[in-house]
Length: 430
Image (cartoon, rainbow, N blue to C red; front, side, top):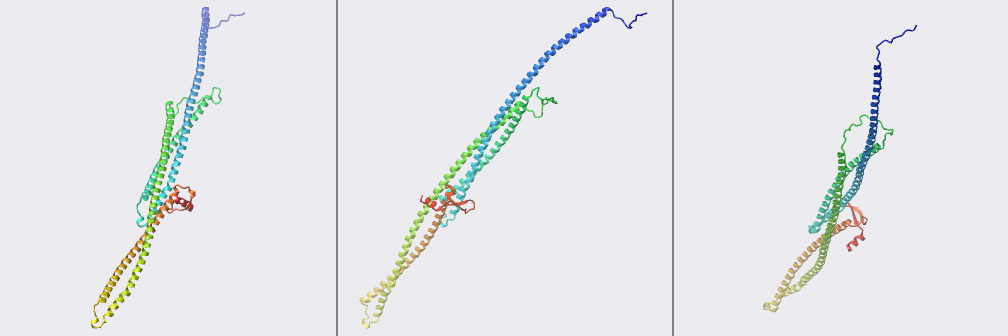
């Protein structure tokens, strides 16, 4: 027989059951409402975050593009400055080389001036004078040394300026390489997207690396590199103008002094030639006077010799008449005449001897003066030869190098080039 089984535990009432059902339904409704609200908020958040993410990525992409443009602009500015600096370095180097060539070329005028001074130091006796030609040669040495000092100073300044330009170029080149690398990095960042294979999460990506600069510092540094390069270019351009003016002034001073020296030498050579011609004319006349004096001496000696006969005759007549006997020993007119003749002859002989002595003294003086004239002629010829050597030596300052035959210089400093005989003759005729 079946029995009724009873479930142990408390029993709920029907209202409790209905309340429970209502509570479950109410809670379900509330949970669905809450879930719906959360879903709506999630959708809004998704839309907002998606839009924010897209716009942030778009804004940062725009910022990257703008930054690339800024860096590229400064990189192009630095490239132009680098080209200008390179051009200025080449121009300054050319001017510096020209100044060095001018400085090296001044060795020849200096050697020539010193050689001319040493030539003229070999003048002898009275010709060793401090004349305008020597003054101009000393002045030429001073001018050349002054020019060399000025050129050497400008070459040193050009070297220092080249060092500054190279330093500025190195700084700009380093900055330009950094900007080039930065542009490549930013372009790489600009080319990335969410589908790129080489993107990943990084450890502490928002950290600020050590040595990070501000945009103001970055632009200030770039502007400083540019401004410094432009300042050095301006200084170099001014220095090039100064060096060019120095070279032109040096050439003008050297040329003007060369003309002054050669004018003084030509004038001195002309004076020497006039003095030499005068001495040769005096030598010719002195020799003629010596010949005439020697002839007169021979005539005087002959006259003295010729006077011995009449004197002997008069003496013999007087002595013979002393032997007249007695009263015939008379002081007659013959006696007086013979006595007067003896006195006259003795006076004539004395006068001739005195004149002969004076003439011989004059002849000795003529010979001495002739020797002095001949010595002075040799001295003048030597001095004239030295001045002509100076003029020949100075031809290397204006004539092409192939016109000279190279020989060892007297002072072992430069090669001495002598003009060919035909060219020398042509210059003498000019």
